[in-house]
Length: 377
Ligand code: GLA
Image (tube, rainbow, N blue to C red):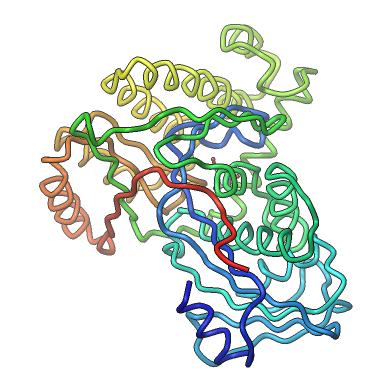
């Protein structure tokens, strides 16, 4: 906090009026169903993006990043136009646009969520700014409204058709818990997720792979789910049971059917995972993670060789369960594994990646952490 304030003074010549932070996330289970009104079960990681913000007397917006020592992006309120702007600053500009601020600002960003690892560094950035703006401009928005605003910034300003999960958990998470989020109305329940006392750890494996399909592939999967809803004449995939969906297979083309099948089965797996957690049944949780991965790999087809190798190797090393997380086509996998097996598992994955000629993976662990907060003003 002191660091960012000090840096703010160096860059902008005065103390910031507010400092706020928001975390990245890992999704335990409930993948690719937030945009189908599903339930998801993510938690916030301890890595955050911190921002420092001050109002200005004029209409100028200046944005600097602690990770980009010299560059300052400068624009004006009038120039906030969706689908334009500097690449790294677009997410920040999108939030300022959507929050309808009425004076210029100076903004410094310190992003500490690993980039490109599928841990939602973009949601952390959006939500930290939304939290700071909400506080400083006395907007009085609820966490759900801030989540919707941050999502709108990403959808409409940046042009990424993401769902609502990442922003919601970045804002609403509670330490020690996973967030059972109803993506239809953004109501939520904190589900205790305390695995260390069970001798377990959740290893995060960043494959460092980024396949080209990331953008088009996501939008295409989303469109398949929308097509299934339209053709079946239902309100959403949330509103049909697995059995009823399967019974109507002949009404859909094969690709649409199988993608919708992932969604309806994943929705059930989330609720089953909550039951498993409430019963401290971690082998059941592990099974559900494995089923989720298979469904994402074989039915939804959003995995990739690097993610599959990470998952398979973790299971060979004794993990109770493992799966890809996030949008897919690269990014991270998670493995639920006994704490004393973590090192061995990391070494095996490292070797498997090197043998396959893949880029070296990175490993993280994180306890479930708190969501966004105002740190000082
Ligand atoms: C990305 C999106 C989320 C969600 C996941 C898949 O992280 O931003 O909204 O759809 O993919 O579960």
